[in-house]
Length: 234
Picture 1 (cartoon, one colour):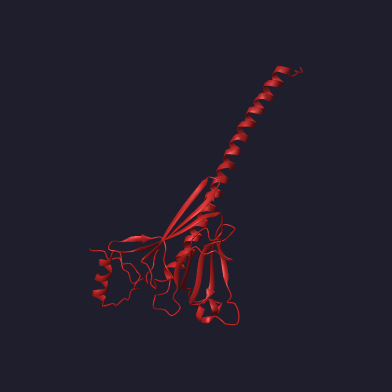
Picture 2 (picture 1 turned 45 degrees about the horizontal axis):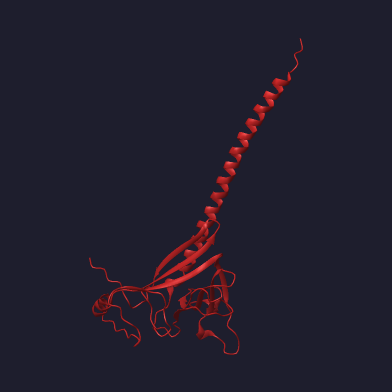
């Protein structure tokens, strides 16, 4: 005997099918949302890791103040590279051995934010290698995008730590006349060109605009060639 499907049974089957499909679609959407957030977090983590690795390969390798091509100064200059709304750092560091000889060993670098809100590191050969009749070559690198702010802080340990290490190691350091000697340790917001020396540490503060809001990244690097030591009693 043939049994025909009634309209009520058909409607019930369609409703159950819609419920099952809706549930599957919801779980599929949840999985896609998790994947998107995971990819975004992985991309952010990779960008931070790359930025940290690149900065740690340059700033801590700043050359000693007694080098003939030494340079270490911060500022807010406005030129064809940076907009001047954020700070920038000009310094000389040891770039090691490279396939391009002009960019081996000591190089001059500038860390700044350009007009497109990108954190850039531009590297030139050491001024000792410059040809006076032509512009020196440059290698700009984009380290991070959507950067809204860039600030630097320079740490000087207590003066008693300097003299203690200098006396034990028999080191003689000549300070600039206008270089204020802090009694206690302090972080300075700028480093003048009139101070031909290095702080003990450099703190880099980078503000970044993201969809979730403003993000602040802080990196601190020691300058091992600084004459101002941090003395720790044991």
